[in-house]
Amino acid sequence: MAISFFSYWPFLFISTDFNEFRTAILERIEARFGKLFDNDDYVLAAVTHPRFKLNWLSDEAKRVVVKLKLKSLIQSNTSSAAKVKTPNDDPEDFDYVASNVLSTDEIDSYLLDRSMNFDMLNKYPNVKKAFF
Image (tube, rainbow, N blue to C red; front, side, top):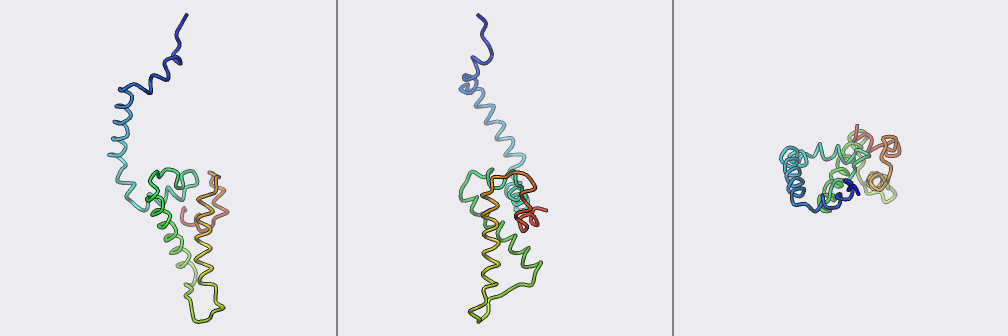
């Protein structure tokens, strides 16, 4: 009776050598690319990419910070592209609040959208503008 590779497969993940190898790889990746995760430009590029969004961030606090940075980026892009609206004394003027809510709703919808292809960015024009 021949023993196949697959009969040993579960034991490969229990092996101490594998855990040391895994730890060494993760440490090398952190040493090589760790600085990139502190750069807002690279982080926002990853978040606006439909494949990654916030999925690669495991720390919930970091996810909240990055989401706020994305909202800030999109709001600055939309306010620089159009005339900046400010609230005035007129109680009927809802344009200022509506523009703020629109970008927040768009970002939340984008982050919840399960689609991972670039065509999905057409549904979120402000996120698309931030990505490109």
